[in-house]
Structures are given as structure tokens and as C-alpha cells.
Length: 385
Image (cartoon, rainbow, N blue to C red; front, top):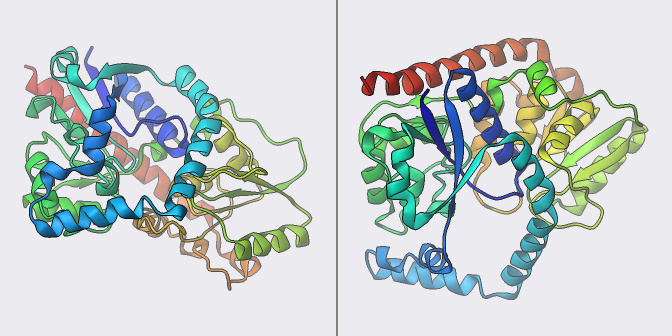
């Protein structure tokens, strides 16, 4: 039996990350492999080095860019946001962590031991989520599996979270090119990511569906033991970024007209009246809701899977991650879900046609599973002969 290690973004506070991790593990298990998710632990110096990347400053322009970045983090508003973010993390950690312990097989490894530890695995898969987002990993090579031999480095549905790599720091593109060229197999999640890779390494790569799309509605309900709602009908709000008062008022007015209560799941900002759920409950609430309002990629994914009418707003945190949702929406002909504050939600409802979307979902499921089996699992078997 082949043993596979998954490298993804770690942290017990993100619903989409935990659910994509679980889905990829399940599909790999179905293909007869043993799977562990590798949680890499780093010391404080490693985290500071990653934050500053001073050794990777290519010129004075980079030094100026770094200085501005550091100074920006010292402003009152930035400090306030980080404090709020840490409070959110602390509140979610144990609840989402319990889901990980129950559903995902995790192996913790110190970053200093990775090179020796890699001998325990036949191959590694980095993905999905924003594992190649330069604003998250910067010059960290572990998300390119740099600790393992090139023949063990695979990616599945890796996301950049941005449309293009920035010009600063000037050595960033060179760093990405170096490690992407060493991958045994590459698949990315968005077409924009495919374009980035192909321009860097002059090689055709696959665009693969997010792991959460590899399970259908009934499979998710069975795996997570999701039940029909017996409570009052409701509207579900899940915004990763902070939601404006104008949008809250618009949703509240919509819910009141339909005599629906409102449930808001806590995103990446702390709020007293927002509920904290585990990933199972996250999917369950999307399934049970009459309507979903979100700015989240996976909030959109599960609304499509569960056939729940949903409305997508742009995020307000200016992190440039909307390309993920835009690609998803167009893939499944769900343009009616993209809304702005001035739009009439009621008029959009007649435009949702989940019957045709389910056919597209099934095609994507088959394609994604085939990529994993043929390009990763079977490829590894061939290489080991």
C-alpha cells in the first residue's frame, strides 16, 4: 500500500481548509492508499524569518517595500485587526480541532526533521486551498515540497489565490519558477493559476477541481451524517471578511420579508452575535438554509453542491482572492449568484437552475478523481517499479 503525505495550510479556524483536506484524504483512501496530513511545526525564529524575508530582498526597492510592509503592521488599525483575528482563532480552535481529530489523520513534524521524515512516504501532495498564495507563504519552500526528492513532489488543485504574482519582492517569481520546475506533477485549481505556472515554467499543467467537489451531495450527507432541519427556516450568512452594515441591513430586510430568521457563522473576524460551528455543522447549515449569503469560496462550493440558492459579495479585506470564486461561478454557470448591494435578490431567485449544474458537477467529479488516480497514484506506482 502506497503511503501519501498531504501538505496544506494548517490551522483549526478555517472551514474550507478542513473540508478540502478531509475530501482529498477520503478519495485517496478509496484508491487504496494510506494517507496522513503533515502538520509542520516551526519555531518562533522560522516565523519571523518568513515574515521579514530580508535575505530574499533583491534590491533597494525590495528593502523599501519591506519597510512599508512592517510599518503598516504597526498602525493602530492593523494592530486592532490582528487582535480581533487572534480572538477569532482562539474561539474556533478547539471546536474545529475536534473535527480534525475525528475525521483527518494528522502527523506533526518539526520543520528541522522534514528531510529525514520524507523517507516514510512514497509521495507528497500539496493542496488544495491557497497553498501557493504569495501573501501567505512568500519564500517558504515547504509548500513546494522542497524537503522531498523531485520525484515525490505532486500538487493537486493548488491555488495561488491571486491573478498574478506581484513584482515585489523581485526574486519571488524566480523562487516560484525554481520549485515549480522541480515538481513531478502539477495541477492547480483556477485557470488564472494555470496561466501563472505555464508562463513561469513553459509547461502545460492541469486545472483540477477543488477536493470538496469530488464528493457529491449524498456522499457529503452520509460522510458527515447531515440531517434535515427540524427548526424554523433560516437565512445563513457566512462572510470571511467583515460584513458592512449596508449589506447586513439588506439581508435583514430580505429575511424579514420572507419571515426567515438569520444565522451568521463567524468568519475571519470576531463578532459577539456570530455562531461558531465545526466543519460538519458548516456544511449542514448550508444544506438546511433557505438561502446563503457569503463572500467565501467554500461557502459558494457547498451551496452549489447542496443546491441552496446563494448570493456572493466581494470580500472587503482587499486580499485579492476573488479570482477563486469568479472561476468557480463561471465553471458551473452560476453568474446569477454574484450580487452587489444595489441588486434585487428576489429577482435573482428564478435564475438558479441546479439541475443543469449537477451535470457539470458530476463531470468535474469524474475528471478530478481521474487526475488523482492516473496522474498521481498510478504514476507513483509506475515510478516505483
